[in-house]
Amino acid sequence: MAHLTDKVFKLLEVIMAASLAAMVAMVFGNAVLRKLSDYDLVLFGGGIPVSEELSRIIFVWLTFVGAVVVARQNAHLGVETLVARFGTRGRTISMVISDVFVVICCAVFFWGTWRQAPIHMDNTAPITGMSMIWVYGFGFFASFGIGLMSITRIFRALTGRLDPVELRQFAGEYDEDLTHSPKGHLE
Image (cartoon, rainbow, N blue to C red):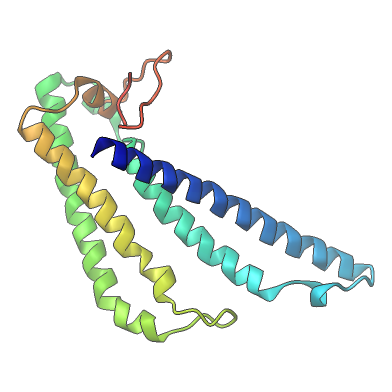
C-alpha cells in the first residue's frame, strides 16, 4: 500500500511540474506573440486566447494538487514556536487538535464544493467552452486528499503509531543532514 501511495504522490509531483511548464510556455508564448505584433509581425492574431484561459485553469489545478502534496510532507504553514516548547505528549495533543480543525475545514470545503457543483457544471469557460466544474471541482480533490491524510494522522497519533520524527517535524525541528522520504518522514 505504501508503494502505491508513493507512486501516486510521485505522479502528482510530475503533474505539478508539467503544469508549471505548460503555464510558462503558454504565458511566455503569448507575451512573445504580443511583442512581435508591436513590430507589425502578427502571428496567430497577436496571441492565442485559449492559452490565457488554460493557463489560469492550470494554475488552479497546480495550486490544489500542490496543497495535497505539501500536506503529505507536513509543510503547510504552522506556528511552531509554541509547539516546539512542548514535550512529546503536548506535541501529540497539538497535532491531533490541529488535524481535527483541518478535517473540519476540509469537510466544509467539500460540502461547499458539493453545493456549488450543479451551478458550475452548467457554466462554461468563455473561450475553451469547458465546464467550470473542471476548475471549481478541484475542491473535491483537495478537500478529500488533505482530509484523508489528516484523519490517518489522527488515527496514528491516537493508536500510538505516530513516528517520533514526524512529531519533531510538526514542531519545526528539521535536521539539515536528513532528507524527506516519500512517506513524509525524515530518514
